[in-house]
Image 1 (spheres, rainbow, N blue to C red):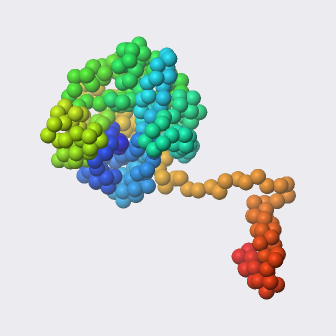
Image 2 (spheres, rainbow, N blue to C red):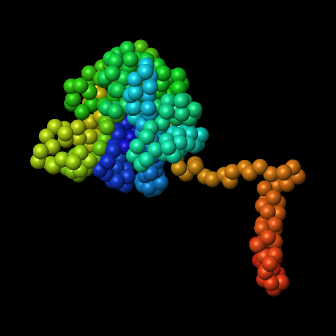
Image 3 (cartoon, rainbow, N blue to C red):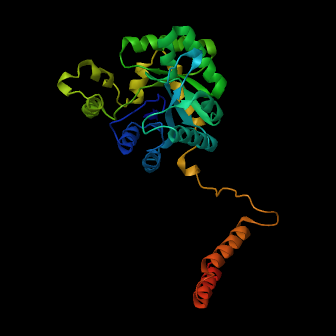
Length: 321
């Protein structure tokens, strides 16, 4: 899934048909300064995405759409939480959260637990999600009141300054009904709105590719897929002007994308590497401790070897130091 940030316009999401380079290319053509990548339950495409964005001088924001087992009010309701990385700590927390989930589940299965989400919330910005997000799931299960409680809990987990109420428009009646509830919740809780587009392919001409993938995933044929493919409509990257027109009644939802992008300072170029601190005895440094362990290992390995071989090992160790 991808999120694009227009110069004055909105986020869009993508899951599936286009490569990072193609999506970054369209954003560059439209003059958009930033784009974010949110893989589903992983950060698989982040390096490739980062390099493409860097080449086009576009800010490449990183995140993930994390599936969470939500047992709120006693009912299981797994939702996909879109999480954007704001800082290096946020990237570390996102990776740790995903790793915990992967270690106990088969590929493409499993979900994070809500207590794990709470533990790893620092440095992350959370959106309320699209069709499969936590707010949509809560509204479907219990209407406005449960949607309100779900967003309130997201505020407790991430902090009210780190929660954005997401809106998408694909000319669908049920989606617009959800939008109206989302706007009401945002106004009541004084949260910012964020216009997104649920992007699934870079340009309108690429929809056919996603239709094929959808049929393969659902074991259907194109000629009898019917309404199954309707969800793929209107999910291409829109120009800033098109997004402004689409959300003309909610201009703050458009403006908030620029504000959010300015907050997301982290990119993969800031990742770097720090060698982990290893526990060492008093009076030692990590280097001196490593040298001593190397010497002990050399003596153990070569103690039954010929004197000539032992001397060669000592000489090699000395030259390496």
